[in-house]
Length: 77
Image (tube, rainbow, N blue to C red):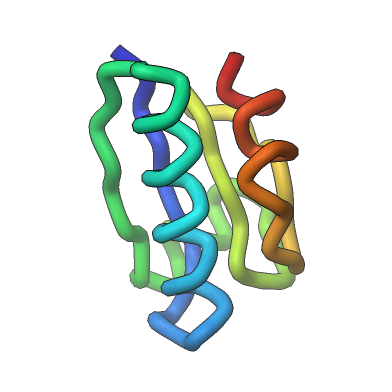
């Protein structure tokens, strides 16, 4: 099971990234667990300075932008 974390304070881009990540995982048929991380110290613990950020299995994959569904699929595969 993939652990997908969306790091961000809840802005529109953060919500877009959550929706994009969910859609990508569903289209790939991947079992996943999604967690929204809004706690600033926890976000900073990942070394992320600009949100939103996508973390897959503990590894920061994207920070500061919302990638396309196709790009997220590549990051999850």
